[in-house]
Image (tube, rainbow over all chains, first blue to last red):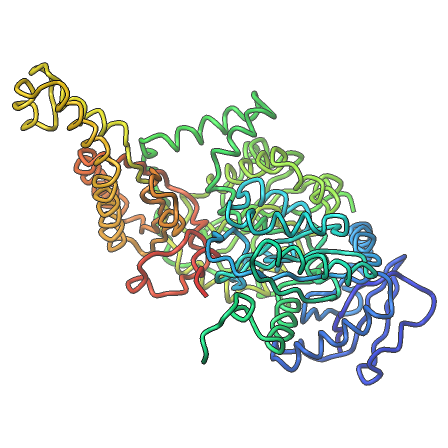
Amino acid sequence: MRLLVYAIIDGARVPPPVVEPSARLRAINVGRIAAVVGHRRHAPAPTLRNIRQYHRTVSAIAAAVPAILPARFGTLVVEEELSFILRTRAASLRTALKHVRGRVQMTIRIANRGGELTPGTETHEAPALGPKTGRSGSDGPGARYLRNRVSPEDRETRRLLTPLRRSVQGWVHDEQVLHRAGITSVYHLVSRRSAAAYARALRTAAHKAGFDIVVSGPFPPYAFAATM
Amino acid sequence: MARPHTDSELILGSEDASLLDIVDNVLNKGVVLSGDITIALAQVDLIYAQLSVLLCAADRVLPDEASELTERHSRRHARRSRSSTSYEADRSLIRRSSPRRRA
Amino acid sequence: MKSLTYVYCLVLSGRRPGVSRRLTAIGVPGAQGTRAIAAGRGLWLIAASVPADEYDEAALAAGLQNLDWVSRRAMAHEAVVEQFLTARAVLPMQLFTLFTSDDRALGHVERQRTEIVSVVRRLERKLEWGLRLTFDEQAVRDAVTAGHAPAPAGSSKNGSRRADAPRQRRGTAYLTQKRDLLDVRRVQLEAARSEADRLFTVLERDAADARRRTSTEQAAPGSRLLLDAAFLVPTSRTRTFRAAVKRKTKELGSAGVIVSLTGPWPPYNFISPSAVPRRTATARGLGSRRGQAAH
């Protein structure tokens, strides 16, 4: 039996929140962080059903804790490996938890046919010779900074996003932008209690600027979980 | 299917929206947990494509140590291609040098 | 732990690849003991020990905010990988591929062995060459201007105009020249573009694989970059490939196209297989990601 990791949360002495009793989750504490895990023999296949179930579980955990880092779907490890990971990566995981504490992800989608493809936007993962990494929408701050340095935002995208950004800048703690197939997705990290006001301000700004957007959320901070 | 009237319809209807969000969030996002560290700086090829940017950066940081490297790279980007190098003679057999490890 | 294992590349070689102290000198800052680790069946990891506090996650997270920090290591990484171009195959690892120990690095290779072997098979005895074609607008303008010059001396590409020039009044000559200069952009750039496409198609036939950056097509209309491509060429065909480029360089020069061939490079752009069979693809991006552009 191996452990399927759903999320990293703050460590605690109290038992993990009872979410999805059928999933029989438990928390494995190492230092001041914990991993919420279930038991499985094999990694779940990325079917729609499994993806929905995973999302439901992560959302339920997120509703019960102040800070959560959703794990990459299908993360299956043996217990010793997990302890090793939590020990060696404690510092960066704690920093990441701090970044998302009390915050949620909101997603904006805009039609942007003029938006040029920027690196890191593909969902296809080429077989990597190195260990699998965080990519395509889950880059950490360092990787994003570099990407932007080398390939800054194109004019059309900036034109669309500027009025939107202005309208919500007081609430946004972090941002990621992805382009794919003529649609630009913007992920914003905002405080949980500001989510509704954020969404209203955004829709007003878009209406004023004269283009359509789709705002969704709040979600657990999937796009802001990566540590680098 | 009726032609979409607005861009938001073009993107999705509300049911599709939540499905798209779920799939978008769950696949390719989330923290990667592995004992080993590696990053894919949004592809290495990006770095190499922008080598000229790096050359300037390296020059600024370490004019001395980087100069050999930058010189080689500058030469490479000049019109001349590098002189051909000799290649290892063909070794037709590759012998097992160690027993196969179990994962 | 005090140190981590930094992996530069995998090498396919009948015998242990030579590793000199020089590799440590030109390698990533902080590296020590660059070595070849046997991974079985002719595969070797080229790795070095690096201080954990300089390359652990915290250090990388900070370093990634700094293009200078990254670029210095990127170039050092490249310098080491290039030392193995003469091996039967070299598979560069991505920047900052780090393991907590040699054993864990080997364990990873073992888990990926099937993939690695298939990549090695594809890349064995082949090298990457980069080809950039740029439109030398100035050279073409100069030729046009020279063609309108009143002096009969001097070589001009527009011989016919030269004959007429002394007869034309100054005003007309000026307008004609203006028009021709504008034509440079519109007509000759288009012509140069099709020449570039043609060259890519010709060279693609001789290569095992070829990739081009699609964004040049989306570039601004006046863009001078006509082609940015990478070719995977069997080493046995290096000479013919380079000769073909050289031949074309002369032809293209007269159309105002500058040819820049660089290499050989480690096959960074060919680690992943093309999504689309080569012969039916019209254009694809460099590297795995950009190649799968349209959804």
